[in-house]
Amino acid sequence: MPGSLDVYVAAIIRRGDRLLLCHRHPDRAWYPNVWDLPGGHVERDELPRDALARELYEELGLVLPAPVNRPFETIYEETLSVELTIWLIDCSHEVVNRAPAEHDELRWVARHELQSMPLAHPSYVALLDRAYRS
Image 1: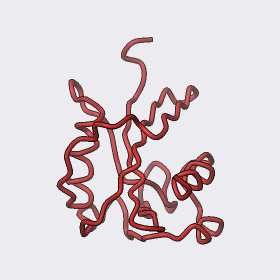
Image 2 (image 1 turned 90 degrees about the horizontal axis):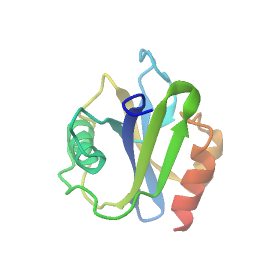
Image 3 (image 1 turned 90 degrees about the vertical axis):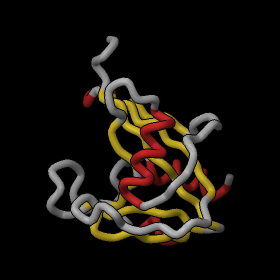
């Protein structure tokens, strides 16, 4: 149904053989105390790719153009009426936690570390594994 989905964007940010994950602050109402991808809500009349560039600047201080490539993955959570579009971005720029109320830690994660990390979504294990191999 048009207008019934909450639309979100996220990035798998890759630097060499590591991916950037953000630890959601334990005080967050939604998905507290888990590791997540940087990103956020698409605002009214905003294109998802523009929302991603905005969110990466707001959360991490990254000044990147809106992605022009196709998304790496789109996750639909029908029970929550949520659509999450994810892009894979190679990035060598410095990142800074500009949103400490949202996430209390940023970490560049090696593939073997994923198994011991509580992730925000069950599909992230396979998704991130695919990003390591791409």
